[in-house]
View 1 (cartoon, rainbow, N blue to C red):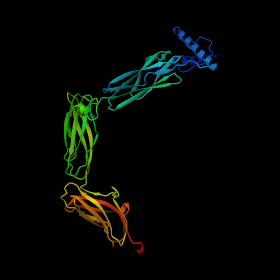
View 2 (spheres, helix red, strand yellow; view 1 turned 45 degrees about the vertical axis):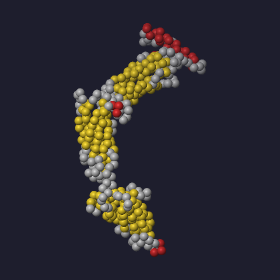
View 3 (spheres, rainbow, N blue to C red; view 1 turned 180 degrees about the vertical axis):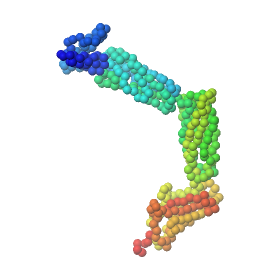
View 4 (cartoon, rainbow, N blue to C red; view 1 turned 90 degrees about the horizontal axis):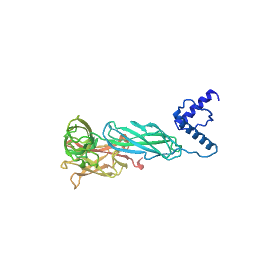
Length: 396
């Protein structure tokens, strides 16, 4: 064997001995250079093992191999403080017939393999792999993992994972609140909760919002009064919010809350998006009424009067008198009658027998009926209508 061949055989043999992840077949008839005297016994054992496995393989027989058996693959740290470092030792047993070799592999964000107790585990023995985790400053649940490589042919990699949750200095239970739909002049109100998993107590300094008539009330509560059960909270407050809308339509605002821990610490701010709706005082009701398209009156033939009625309701001040303010197309007529129930009217749309032909059954050519208080232009609503007035087939 030439010099180059000897060097390559030596390299391959060392890889098999040190790494333990492959088997090198070589017919070595010399003592390799670089093996210290205190390593010769181990070297001889490894060399004998390689030759024995080669012999078994040539004879078509199975040879002993390592078998990695982790006692557990997952661990939950539970609640941890911000910027805390925690660790957990995972036990891995070798239930095979050959030495088990372990090597730390890649990890997910922030999770590190601290130590591998022993890189070589004899049959019947075990070692530990320690994972370390630094919480940093996050509130959400976390789960991170690490991979350990082995020379177990049936389990070349083992994934170990840890999970937990970081305690929060302040948690706002709702980042957005839906206010109940109200009539004009009614107060819209809602409640939410704030709690801390770190502070023994805190105070709500101020709450601001640009909604008209906005008011707030805050009160400390026991942590057992929080609606979501055990949250590992140390202190909690209930925050009640209200607004008095000044106009119809959508209600939206941004609320800013300033909180200060008792006993020292910087003021913390949180935001809540408020949304609601002030109901239009006049509404139309019918099973065939589409919210976007309105009411389809269908095909109406000239020479016959066509009538279609719906219900109109007036919310709030039922003492007002409603009337039909406008109708389109002009060929259509409309009548509004009071019913026996206060605030409820019957609206009838009429296509007279002598109405001229007209199409109003397309998106860009719809008709409508407008109903409201003739004395108050703000108190009104309109209902889209679709249809067509056409000539009788005998008159075409």
